[in-house]
Length: 271
Image (cartoon, rainbow, N blue to C red):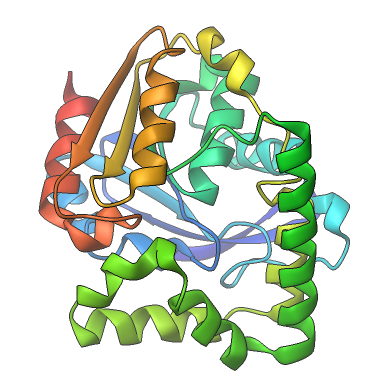
């Protein structure tokens, strides 16, 4: 099922499928609900009800130009409104990269609504104020470049980042699909997302990880050394944390090693 829900004055596009235990899927920057297309059928067969919204500024959801609408408190409120609209009291949440950051904030804001949490290749934020300010400036520069140069430039830039180097080994059909997804975004939506919810703008939650009472799975690719280090640092703060480091995968574990990704997540959710 695909459809549109109006939540707090914003039209959100939602893909929903399956019956059983609810699982809220939150994609990364430049993504959409289609991010999960390779692994979604596996979860559906195993008895999960999947909820995959296009996050604010992405896919077919609204993309307001006011960056203040993208701040984490607003987006968390939108997700809670989504759960209310669907009459879901409690759900497992899986977030990738930007979606993982949002998932952490959702679980900290409304712990009674999150049963289990999976964060794939995500950070709790940047603790150092100087480093955070530098990242905020870099995000602003990227936002301006997207607005001025357009999506064709951005697609080349995004694909060339060292963070995604291991993704170049993916089948050409998968890489074409990714590129098509980037090119269907809206420049002002991506720019506003960076300004309102970039890693430099997002309040860091390192000091609050110990407050997470639900089980948390930290999932990272072994080739993604920076996020392996972040994941291990998170483990020292999480009272109920588990880490899985997936071999031969980089930042996009769900694409690079979909079977390993599914087994790790499904096993964690079934405990």
